[in-house]
Image: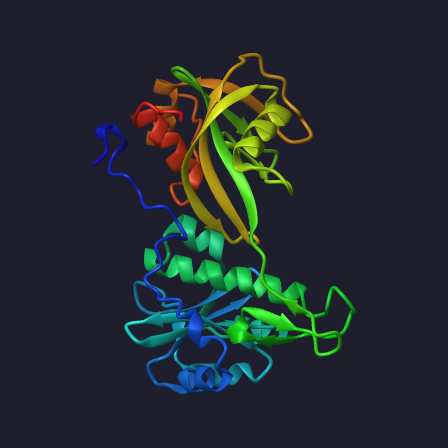
Length: 316
């Protein structure tokens, strides 16, 4: 229940709370997975590049395909086992460019990027986490077809969760890149920035990759200082979110600001400034007099900002 009725009900965070059981113990049995893929109840998400294939189906498009519906794609696609839902298997079919080109010609299928699907609410929320995993895996497989150690072609194994090199025996696993995303707080003000790639009038949290040998807290303070010149102190963890663009984990935090003067690094940001709590509430509600906006509710930045607007943040 929100403490701010003017903001409406709290929205759900995107790409989280999957209903799938990952069933990782089944990944190593290739024969059993092949049998699962042939089961009539098994379903496939079809992905290629940035695109997700959706079957046009009345008022709501359907991202799930039965095995017999995929015969026209040929044998070039690789499948990744995502898990089980009520005992039925879910796979991501990772399609190469020729298969995607063939789908583009079909009038009964729409190809839409995952970011647009999530932002526009085109599918039920429960599909988003599975699609995030599938898209991240598709991106990783497309970039790791050759061994980083010896250059030989690798092969997909372990249900799509590993690639093996038959030459030097190296094992390659999908990676996740940790990213801190944080809201610096100064009493009744918070610090928001504008990236060069943002849509006009949108302001959001600052963010940056965690570097090797660095804690989350140190990354929060370093990135805030580098991008805006603001020195920070205590850090409070908020929540995390898979972000499959291409394969990051967003680690959301609130952080205590200990200085006030902003010095923007324009190689990183277009601008940054302090916002009063009341002004941010108008941005979240879509009623800002100058049209300034907060991030879409699918993104963790929206939830980090809204939590501050609605309540006091306790730093540990």
